[in-house]
Length: 461
Image (tube, rainbow, N blue to C red; front, side):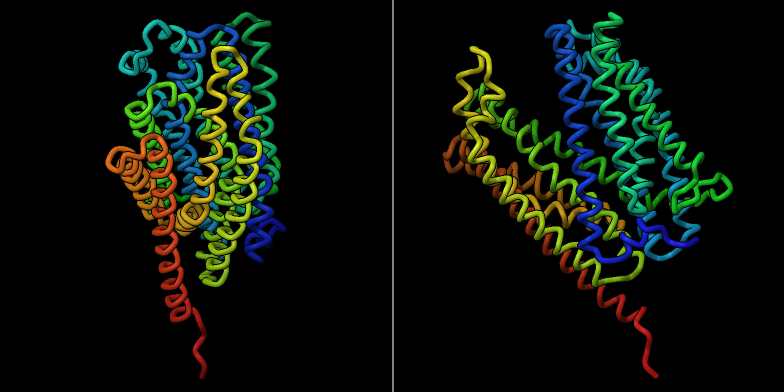
């Protein structure tokens, strides 16, 4: 099959490919964040218990949806590598296996969660909010398949460089959810169940649209006709080798937040946890451009690896880090300059007004955290792209669960720096862990170059 313009783009200049893939991805992530915020705002109108119920369900929901992201990352990596290797049949089969995995895993997880939802909520301490949580969770987990499937379908489009339609699908979900929320919750008087139905139906519409493009319109580079499916255990293994570590990385980040919060409570009390939480939400917003670049690098590095193009792999790694640092510097400066107006967003009531100076200070300090991220993040995404998901997981474990926690503890409690020690430890640990990941990726790329030259450079007669 002839190459589409999107495939030609991802197999061509890696610098141009990264930029063209990253910008739509940034927009997609921004939409997701905005519709999550809108969801919370509408539910908040039902009262504190309803909002708390969403808080109890969200971590579990994000872990399971994160599994869909992981399968999507695994499929994306494998499809991109096969496109790079010009193995069209195997690229089709890899995509179909990704979709099969999304169906099987979502069904298993749905059955498990729905059976054990009540004891899970009791263990989490849902208390008086448990009925609200059940009304919401039975709907969103009952539709878990559409959330997992949509991540994998979106990855299919990303893997062949079609970010336009991947972004449109996410935009449909976000915009429709923001429209349906107030209608279902208040106009139809469905309460918190309305929020669940709005979320589920908007995601379903996204799935319908992507399915039409894949099997109705059939204008992808890939051909996902059922006749192209040939069960291959190795494809399942290769996909899971990226999917499982990618999913575990989300769990690691949640564990890091719990540990850091515990240290903050010991050092400065629960009020400071609220300050740190608000500040980290700003950091997460600022990180969207970096995550967009990282997602683009996954595809481009996978294509380069599959094509045995060591030069493009090297450029993908170094260029993404360079762009990442430039963006981080700009955004870090903005965080410092506008720290006070940013703090006012989270301290607009009389009860929270006293937090403004602390939030402004913490946002300024954590601007350094943004600077510590690019080289480690991009190195981890390169490893995911080439199918070495376990390497990416090791970098995240080393950086987040080990070094950030260890340095935060040392600086705060051993050196006696207090709260500033925790912030300094998180920043320093992130930078050191990222540096180790960067050196590891450079060594890997150098070895890949030697192997590629030895195996694939024609010998002179």
